[in-house]
Image 1 (tube, rainbow, N blue to C red):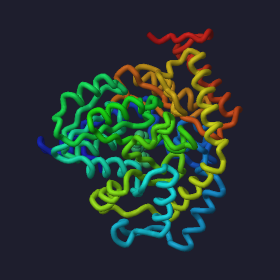
Image 2 (image 1 turned 180 degrees about the vertical axis):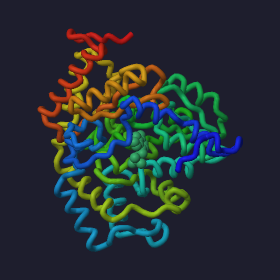
Image 3 (image 1 turned 90 degrees about the horizontal axis):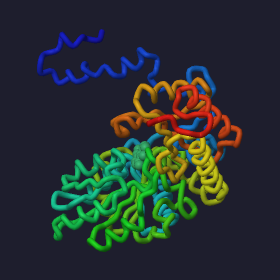
Image 4 (image 1 turned 135 degrees about the vertical axis):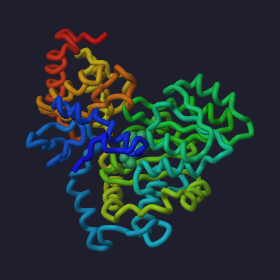
Length: 412
Ligand code: PMP
């Protein structure tokens, strides 16, 4: 039976858990949008609470999670290797499949070497922790993903955070830092909430000027943007100028896991020193086989990236023309700003009832008063899906007084 707070000792470490009532309050209002169990999905549509809705909030950018070829690749290796590795890469958990994937990814990204991790989160947390130490300085964009923040904290390096994409501020921080310290600039390549690209040309210049190394987290960029899906730096033709590029398999690659590519010596150092790599079990075989097949499809079926770009431009333009604020999105991640948190939950619910699933993002994920629904698109969305999504946005936006009939925002 759950205890009540009055039964806890004054200094009980669990007090904070009993003080946390926000989720229950939102549930009581019938507006809670999180942890909704999907009962079935074909990728672009999902069944939730018995209702079929269009998925407009997945990171399945290439639409490969339900591709029969990808599913078969996973099934086939299960017969050969079983379901799990039961150990870390360092010891009994390295399969020939892991090595094949590392080689193919290094090749695809045009870098010396690659090392896999079991999640994208561990990739960044574990690599940053290993590369930066007590006497180093990390320069980190304030909108960087939580795993980068964790990596900077556990690294014990001094961390200087700059305002999102503010290159002048970054320059000042670089100027102010101890000249003799090792320096690492870390940025998301595509920012996960706003869908903006990092200013890679400026980052490359600043890294050179101040003798810093540059690390891009391309979780939402590899398999999404750039030459053949090679990520944010390749959008600018600067892949060779970036020292370390990480990616994840939980988005375009339809699986779970992550990787980082760079110079051989640096990758070998990470491979042999990163606690997240050494002390955690390796990617299960079916996950690795999924990524191998997805990587093959990404390279063969170039229409997927073209379609993704076309769809993203279409949705951004249409939503903007309706009067919605989509921030400065440049990718398939398109946020729609609603404002206050409760209003955002209401908007989310109305959209769901109109047949569209999106993700509600509220503080601390975004600044106060800027709660938003994060939409994201897949190469496999049909025109009909897209137009149904737009229709739902128009209807709910007008009903809730967020936009008017003439394409104007009614928000302050
Ligand atoms: N980096 C970024 C920018 C992300 O958005 C995410 C996940 N949303 C991660 C890393 C972590 O990846 P994963 O979910 O595969 O662990």
